[in-house]
Length: 157
Ligand SMILES: *[C@@H]1O[C@H](CO)[C@@H](O)[C@H](O)[C@H]1NC(C)=O
Image (cartoon, rainbow, N blue to C red; front, side):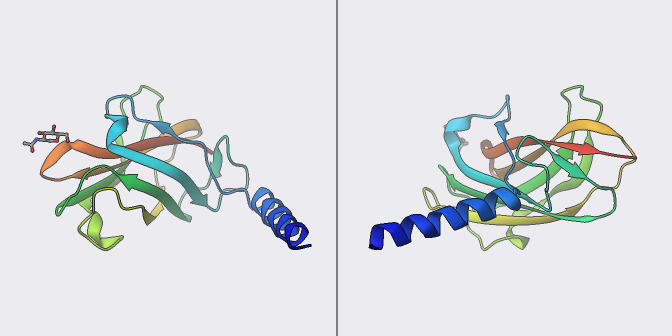
């Protein structure tokens, strides 16, 4: 009986998550050591079309939420958000410049402690098409200690 109730709750939760499909597929950044950070999930809100990519509108507010476990500690934590909107692999467009990540979450970042971050941003550049966005969080005292991932968005005219 209890087992059935648990399944029912799971099923409802599953349907809910499919309808609101905000989770996005993410990839590790090629130039960053992936062993320094376990990323459990990445969500963009709103993202009605996930998880392959999110349809994104200019000048609208978005919230990127990521659930991760860093394999390093940091007192000085930096965060940046860039897009590679010409698909050159360079992530040249600044969405959020490098800044103190402690405005998004309590600091310091502790080694091996699972943490959630919410980052609010607006995409302003007039570019159309599908391209990746890169989120990077790193130890300001040692840049080789970082959490970094990319996910795909598509902007429309
Ligand atoms: C920077 O971090 C790497 C990876 O954790 C570590 O091997 C290295 O010793 C650190 N460098 C300094 C100067 O602390």
